[in-house]
Length: 177
Figure (cartoon, rainbow, N blue to C red):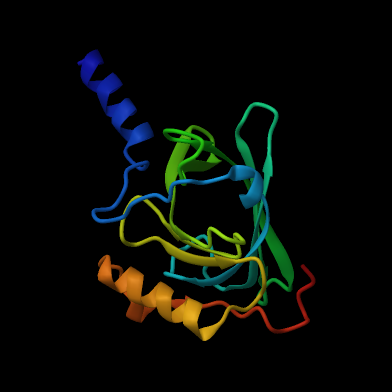
């Protein structure tokens, strides 16, 4: 019985760091170019960002090789910015866009960069461990229609529910970033 409990705990702690079918992490990936501020352009809905606008993610390198993650967004209902701090670690090699991120202790979820502007690191397509987590991030609050179209087409081809995408309001000056 003790062995079953240990195996169940291991499965729970590692079960959310897989890769969805068809999704391939980018390679090469340079974390020093990726760190900094990103704006959330689009996402599939999930409870921890529901009701937020002006969402950003800020990444910085930690001395131990992990990455500090600060996600924030404006809640019109609360009239303030909400923030969550976490830590990301590479799942395999540091030159591959396959990380795991935790905001809640030992529980990690996949953070898979499956498309990245390799020239300027200006936009990235991100997936979680399943097809219910999807993001388009960019270095600026807006992206071209071509980038949006490429994101939708690639995500749809991979089986994501692109008809359910939420395009994040980044336009209003009411939420200082």
